[in-house]
Length: 186
Image (tube, rainbow, N blue to C red; front, side, top):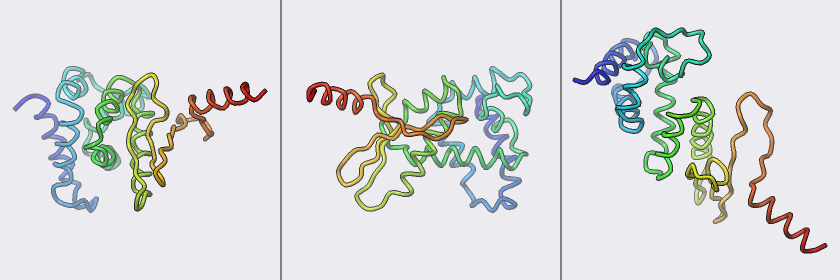
């Protein structure tokens, strides 16, 4: 068993000791960890849990939250947060843009990417009938974090940054088009 698998196995054992108290169904913890391992990759998890195994402080704001959560299966909140992340990723496991989001999760700050995926997953839950949600690729010309399809029309959705008040973020392409029309009309 690899060092990553050993670290994840220890986490599963600790989390399963709290499973009944948290009213979690059997198998959810194992399935969630397997999903994280598959989507995030062993190399990233090795850097997070094994190679960078220096002690962490729960009060250090610069610690990657996923590292903190996966190092402490004795904290109920950490168990729930790992399962929450896995649930959001599970929602988009067949979305071709998920790999872009997981790469961004690995290289950028954790919370903004977590927030994007969480909002997209929540919109997926809220959508009914012919509505759908798809993640956007992380490309320079991408508009929005995800697209919501309502009535056959794709609408880009941009998540406001954490720590800032909500605001309407107009798509760059729409603003350019509007400016061009105003210029042509005048």
